[in-house]
Length: 366
Image (cartoon, rainbow, N blue to C red):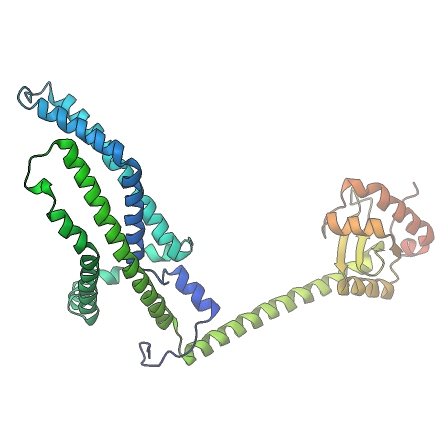
């Protein structure tokens, strides 16, 4: 059973938060053999598709080089041309393989990490640079286990490729004269046969290694009971903090309503789901201002405060919906609402003239 640094047994399944942290840190089931297998497969595809062209290119270069062997004089003038020709041939042969290697790295690693970025995994860890720790790792049990695993890989690969290698050694190419074309054809066929056997062996190795890595990652991800309790307490603590913050914001909103709504000129409702408190002072404001708004419970609270202070309440569903959606608390209404709000205020001023007169507010007459 796995244990942590304090000797406590890890018996509990990891929480969702723990799994996310492990993934971000690059700790997930990953096998180097899977990446190697992808590299071999892509390399085989490249060689299979481009083999005729690569063989012909190399044959022409080799024939040309052998023909010029007796007459070629290497000096300052001829070397640049010869070097350019050599690099052109080498590039046409090597670049496709290099591109396949890059794609293999991306596909091999991405398929195991589900193509999720893990930036923490590439952060430098200076603790790994300790010479003493490195020396201990050389002679650790893990190093010995890796040695036996490497030997097992060699046995598997050799077992798959031995029949092909035995037939190759009996080929007449090793004890008779042949032309260059036949030699290149023999090399290509041999490489393809051996490559297919190696890929077959790597499939077995990669499957076994990945299964082991999945099991090992599951064991390493286990948590102790104390770790689960600590994480649960932390999550509960965060929930309590968020709840307290939410309660304080709600209290601040209630306090603001208690202060602003009694000074409002009108409450526009929807009639029960929305409530918007408007205030307009033509001496200080260029347009009516939203001093409070709310939905459902808050709308009910706004209406209760308005009734306590005898603030007029007007039901107008379209205007209430537009005010709630497009106008913010503490800001003036949008120009598109001027006409509709002006009509509501005019009605309120006509029907509640005495209320505004006692407040000392100058009521518009136009």
